[in-house]
Amino acid sequence: MLHWTAGLDTAYAVSGPETQQKNNNNSVIMSFFTCKVTSLLKTGAICGCKRNYATVSPSHLEAGYFKPQRVLILTKLSRYEFEKRRHPELTERQLEKCLQTRGSDYNILLYHHYIHKGVENTVNSVFTAAGIETRTVYRFDYSDPNINWADVIVTTGGDGTYLLAASKILDRNKPLIGFNSDPTRSKGQLCLPQKYSVDVKEALDKLLKGKFRWTFRSRIRVTLIGDDIYKPPVELHAQQLHYHEYRYLDMEPHLRTLKDDVPLCSETGMARRVLPVLALNEVFIGECVSARVSYMELSFDDVKGIKQKCSGLIASTGTGSTSWTYNVNKLTEQNMEEILTIVKEETGFKIQDTDRNFVRKITNKFNQMLITDPEVPKMVYTIRDQLISSPMRNECIKPRGFAKCIRVKSRCFDACLVIDGGLSFTFNDGTRALLEIHDEDALRTVTLHGDLTEVSFKH
Image (tube, rainbow, N blue to C red):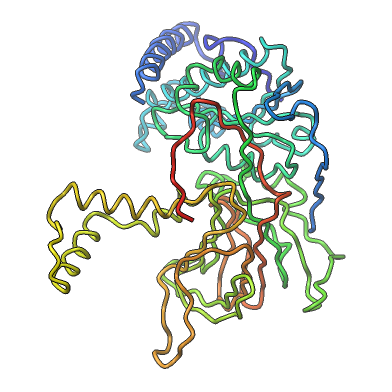
């Protein structure tokens, strides 16, 4: 367990037989980087699972009231820390040479490591100064006992760390708040606005004074029916795939255990499992090899199932509608200009198809319509590269739409069901999936007063 209570100057103690001179050099570099990033930030440059649902909110979660006693801080493992864990026998100089041979810049890694640690330690110290007990953990120790210990989960990292934290919070009354620990590198769409990365105290002051509103982000619950549904999932992060010893899944019994006595589906008589993680962004279903056609039977809400060939199905929440789903469906200015030119030629209307500002305005207006309110209890589905197998068939599903319940039956050869781009479950021929939105699965987050993003939701 990690307990970071010191300031930035003690954020990380370099392990190994290093000289005092090397440590002094690191301190100088850290001070320089700290001043640099502070300046940048200030200028803005930069069912098989147990679910516990509380029917009454704890006192510290009443409307406009935020008084937690214990906060669990989930922090990301920086690339520098990862390399140190991977090569514990190397000195700093040896590590630098090792990274150089692989084309990585040691100084850049160290620079972003100190930025991250600076924000992490500031978050810890600000909460501690407010009389709140804190506990800081990496993903390896992000376990149910630690989650249950805390009143609130706080992340220091980016959207990846935030999604990891959200996936294991099954209690609607457990708030999640994210601080982007390196806004010079990532936007951190799910975290608090970037200005709070350098002014954590202002964020906490607003929370303690009730200057916020609760935002309940809808999430997707996945139920699998079929064979091999208890096979361990794969974590789709390069470093975890290449370096088995760092895979946090191997430490999670409820994810890796193969069960002998499992509940059966009343309709099919096959094994049935509610996945112990919830999707905050999206669920993807399709062949593991993108060049292979995905074949599946799809049913949306009460619509009869239809067999479909495509490049996979994406079912996203309102939160995820700004992510993968958005980029799959958005139009570019080039597309829009070509469409407007065709409309002009076919109708004879005087359309400003070559006016850059006009084309950009229409493009942005269309793309904005793709974004959905994160609190709306429905999914946005996208059928990627939809194929019409027979021109004689009248059956057709719109490639994009909305649903509160989606049923999928796999006809695939080597397919997967992926939660938030992180956990991949086997989903081969005959396996079925039920995707649903339930109010009790919503994730409790905060929107601070004065920081509302003005978005006009069209759906």
